[in-house]
Every structure is written in C-alpha cells, then in structure tokens.
Length: 369
Image (cartoon, rainbow, N blue to C red; front, side):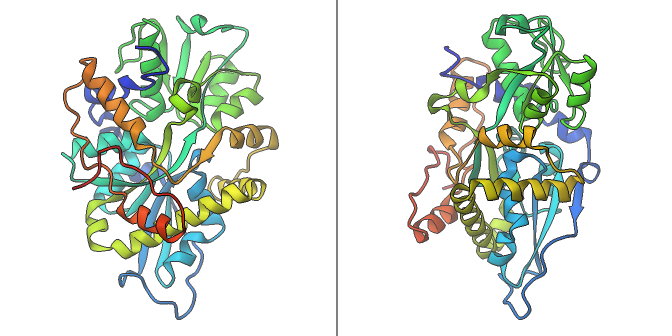
C-alpha cells in the first residue's frame, strides 16, 4: 500500500498489541497540572445545566491551540456564563483518558490514538469524539550530520513522545512501510524507537543521545532551532495533506447528563477557531501567552513562528482519516474489527455550526446511533 494511501494503518494495530499499557503505567495526577487561574464567572450569570463548574483538559502543545487560545481569551468562560470553567493540563493522552474515566475532567482536547484506545478498551462506553480542533503539526526532525535522507533513518535512534501515543504509532507505521522491522513494545529493531517526554527531547537531541524525533509542535521547531533538519512533514503522507492531530472528547456520562454544557464548550471552540483563523498573529501571541502561564516559559520567535505555520485549525474532526486507519488495519490483517462505530457524536457540533452559518461536518459512518 503506498505511503500516501495509508499513513497510519499501523496505529490501531500497535494499540491492539499494546492495549492501554501507557494508561496503566501512570496515574493522571502525576501527569497533570491543575490550573487555578481560570477567569472569574460574571456576577449574576446563570449556571448552565445547574453546574458549578465544567472541567476541561488539554496539553501544553501548539497542536492544542484551540484550548490554549480559548482559555487565554476567555471564550470558554464567556460561553459557560455562571458555570466556572476549570482547566487541567496534561503531558500525555493516556493520563487524560484516565482522568476522563474517573471524572477528574469532563471534556478534553486529545490526540486520535488515545481516543481510539480509550474507546475500544472500554467497549465503546467511555467517551465520544464530539469535535475537531487541529490538523498537521507533526514532523520528523533529524541531525543532518547523521541522517541525510529517509533511508539513513535505518539503524538510528529516533524519539517519539510516549509508548502508544499518536506520534509513536505513526512512526511505527512509517517504519513498517519502509520494510523495516521494529518490536513495538521494546522499540528495538532496524530503527531504535526511544520513548522520550517532549520536554526532554530537545536536550537529548542536543547531547546526541538521539539522532532525531517524530514529534508534534512546538517540539519539532525546538529541534530545528538546535540545528535539526525537517526530513519529513507527516502532512505529506495524507491525501489533501490533512489528518487529525487533535480532537475534542467528552465522557458519555457527562454528555448524556449535561448536553447544554457540552454545547456551550463546543460553541466556545467554534468561536475560538473562527477568531484564530481571522486573527492569526494575535492568536499566535495568545497561545504563547497561555503556554507561558501553564509552563512558566514562552516560546521564542524562532520556534513559535514555524511551529504555528504548520498547524491548521479546524472544527472538522476529519473522521474519514480515522476511518481509513481502521479499514486499512483490518484489510491488511493487522487487527480484527476495532469496533469504532459510535465513537463520534457530532450532533451538538453540527447544531452550533448551523447556528453560525457554517458547513456541517461528517462522522464518516462512525457516529453514535
């Protein structure tokens, strides 16, 4: 199968081989930061669904720009009115899934692989994908002294953020499409896959302990600032150069019990995305300001600018890309039926989009009945 027809067909297969290992490896408490800097609710504003608060999770990555800007510019709090928007920041998808399952958060921005893993592991009972957020923003960055072409990746040490995360399974799939062999659990084989936290990867690259990394922004641009070269942009592997990198998920319990609150968050997301696309420079600055608030450090311009350019902000969850992953994995014999039917519920998103005069989006036949 050509690379541009099945960019992540091994993603679900890797998850089947490694069912929720990463989730079991850590508790969400050690991976998350509780943000107490939420905007104050407007005095006298009415609570939505009678809720005191809605707990929202996201990552400190530019690929979660909707959440970053939505928090920083107050879009979520404005939409929720008298209900407090509370935020929790995560470093990894599995820990966010655990938080969603436990009720520590209600809604979250997250990558596709953890969402698939969480849904299938729970037999379709834990979550729904209710909206899109971003496409792109993932690159293979290498040391140009050690790796001059794609074939030179063989035999080298390449970092991914975490065992079984979205970039990890994407890289494992790309390796397989080169005809190389790697054990997905140990990372050993024709390429050494080194699972490394994004915060540590730039230092590991600088010291030479890794030769490159398949990582999201802004980590990719941090490596370029350290002398790295972009060898491959993952977008080039996808038809139309679009693939989902960030979705919005909600616990099914919260969706059933508090649809008005979910709609309010989705309305804020749509408003945020519209503002981002209309005001890219201001949005970039807002995202960076929130990153600084969350991590204590803003991104320098030589990292922020190229990283921001590589990410497309969208309301569309690009469900067909997820559907393609599943179909190709099944057809190639890598996986039995992943049972993804029902993973999407785009009813409220499409209601909001219609209200805003925007085009509705499709669930690729994977919607809840």
